[in-house]
Image (cartoon, rainbow, N blue to C red):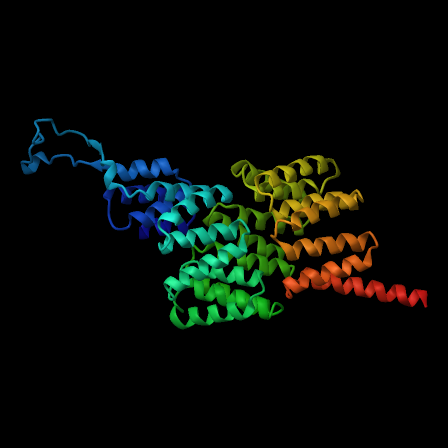
Length: 421
């Protein structure tokens, strides 16, 4: 298992998978951990189960006088494989690996359905609840993820795994006191774990966003404890990208992608290339992501964002956004993309209709109110723009895009008053 981890750190996924397959055939205590690692490396649940069920019979050593026949008279020769009886396999094992596989393919709504069924049967299983929560985070169902993480901590106040993901949820929900409490607890009980330092970086970014060097230093500490921590490289990449350090950010995102092939790392690479005005190169990367994760709303919206940069790509981008919304009606990336195309065409009424429809779903309320405010501002409905900016900030007081938009709106209003006078 350690050797496989080294191979993963070096980006040698095929060698790591080969080592992990060997561990499964040994049927040792590391089986569960190795199953998760194999799924994350792209192995299918069916293949993982096949490896787990397989039972090897050792080749007889003739030099030691070992018999060449079994007790039932059959000849011992090459390795003989037999299936373990079905009753020896835990009933939750296959659906669990299926849920992990769906997460790996970024089909989070399908994964949620699998995990929810398991949760009804094994509701106190902490690793299962952890994956339920993480899956909700990836699908932007932050309120549900928070409830699940809180449930985990009620069952085990010292649970550590994925607590940094919980920290990111609290930051997005602007629950800073709760985030501060979580960070202090992790530092007090598990300062040797990457989750503690990653959560500290999330807290620092929320409280002191301009002190990016301190945030980067905390992320670097987490990475020193676990060099395979792809999420840490993504975190660091976004911090650097916001500071205009596009080359350094691109390196972080590429490292994350080398460690773990996923949509979030691809998104970082694309954003860094777009920031450098490398639109064609960004489109190539987004297209590669789409080919691997064609059923991921995030991948569809990402490619749409790139194609929308070209006048001839607007129609294809609109199709991708609509397909993303068919897969996930809550996809904020697709909503933002399709409304941006309509704003360019000055179809403000259609934009308002789409955004108000999605407000009824009760997800991404702060971002939707902000987008509505921007549209009303562009269409010279200042009072409605002010109303929606205030609504966004009442939900999320730390939402920078809403703060900046409100500041511009008030400045424009002052200038109009001055001109009238």
